[in-house]
Length: 336
Image (cartoon, rainbow, N blue to C red; front, side, top):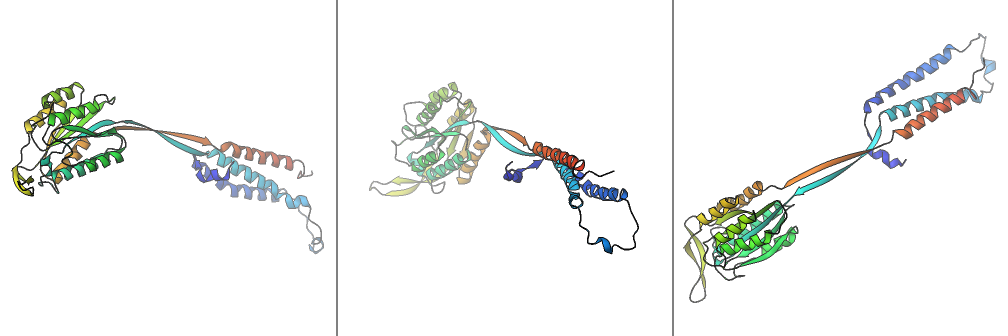
């Protein structure tokens, strides 16, 4: 047996070690019984006996007691059942496929969220990705048209890199909510998982695009895709960049217009919810709420296997007992 094994040994029945307290009793009993059966004679002086040699049988007779004690200790340890355990886990994860559909139109540069709506949306989306370690997530961007920035993937590092690169101006300007939703649905319709989710974020009203939002809604319902909609923007007016005739950019207060009835309809008819984010904190809380609503089911089954080591100890105990019996009735046999 490898000695290093004993560093990891556990005992199934450690209470048996209390029996080791009987060893001193065994030793006392052996010596007291030996004195009881010894003969005695009276002499006037032991001076003449001091030079006599001591027989080897006398010197080694305590070996019988040592063998009996070893046998008893080994037997007690075997009864305590020394064992090692090996634990393995089987993780069964029922993941969720999610697509983030983010509006990147020019109005997303408004500064009612800090530093602006676009950067706040990117930061919150990346935090959301970090919280969904067992889910596949994809990214769709849209303004006047839509584009799949990243297909659904488990490689969240690549996904976050793609989120960081999005900016206003990558696509033709406008707000094509129907296109953003339809493209996201297209990313999910072939998915085999039970739960498919779209998080659609916009700050405006649908004003362009080849696909009407209600048509995209019907497609999402057909594929049983749940849509959470998020409207981004303060109540009233917000400071937004505007390009002047001379080419300069100035901040102007612009009315915030979000088609909330449409957003609520898309969410309610697909089993999702509509949220309104008026600042950075509320946007963060919205993603946190969606994270709680769409929890991934993870089942962990633990298997513990034991390997027993009592048999070698039982063999040691038996060997010591047999050796003691053989020696007691051969080499160390008492003469009548």
